[in-house]
Image (tube, rainbow, N blue to C red):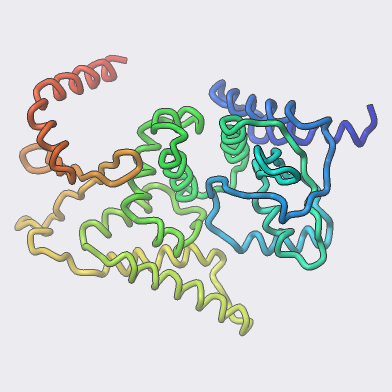
Amino acid sequence: MTDTRKKRMSMLDSLAAAGAGSAAPSMMSTNRALRSARNAVDSHHVWELDPGAIEDDRLRDRLDPADVLDLRHAIEQNGQTVPILVRRHPSEPDRYQLVYGRRRLEAIRQSDSVTKVRALVASLDDSAAMQAQISENMARRDLSYIEKALFAQELVESGFGNQARVAEVLTVTKSSVSMAMAIAGSVGRELIEAIGAAHGIGRPRWEALSRAIDDTGADRAELAALAERVHTDAETALVRQEPVPEDVSVAAFEAVLKAVSASPAPRRSAVQSTGKSAPAKHPITIGGRKAGSVKRTAKGLAIDLDEPGFADWLEAEAQEVIEELHARWRTRAED
């Protein structure tokens, strides 16, 4: 086997091995999906395709467009070193559908000097293509918390599976998927996209922003406009060769959180006579969409449901539902 062919055959193996040096057994299924994609590649041949012949209807998993510009410059200077993965279009000859490699494809589409995209062509059905995208997503370590939260939300909303299924393929707990989706749903996609990836901002601070928005009733559109102004100001400063934040999206997040924290509570009842803040409401999501909220009270737990019919049913079935939940809690406590 020639050295060139060995390199071609190892491309997807390298992706499958990324981050797996001390991986737990739960990572095996994701690595297996990448190896399955590798095995489906036609003769391990790297093709040069017209970027316009490739459709991209995959779920979005990144928020920062700036890295595409950086990648475009790198490809123009050094060439495209890693091929993208596509599959043949099921009904249109000479057309393809992207499996993964969106940033590389978009970078070449924006380039004036690079006209062809190097690609591996695989025979994959919808399910296998989705699994390969998820696995490649997990092999990367540079997605921020909120990007992963939006990706999980889109997986559920696209019909890929419920939260338990998404948790399984992402090798995380169902509760972490539920919490991430609740935060993404509460903050809202428009505001999240205005802020950006915000690398380094983890669950606790995104949850704090979510609670602050719910507690104050802040206008998300106004907050999104504020975040966009931070990005615009940074772009202007860059042109003027003035200092800019190391990560503008983090600066946008900080500005939004500061604005919400400074907003007065909409109701006097938000602060109790003891001077302590009222218990925060935690959003409840069903199928990735906000369905109500739950919060601790002085006497116990209060649940608000947005759908009246479901609230009526839960009221009628409360005894049985609570007994079942209590049994599950006891079982978990004993484990």
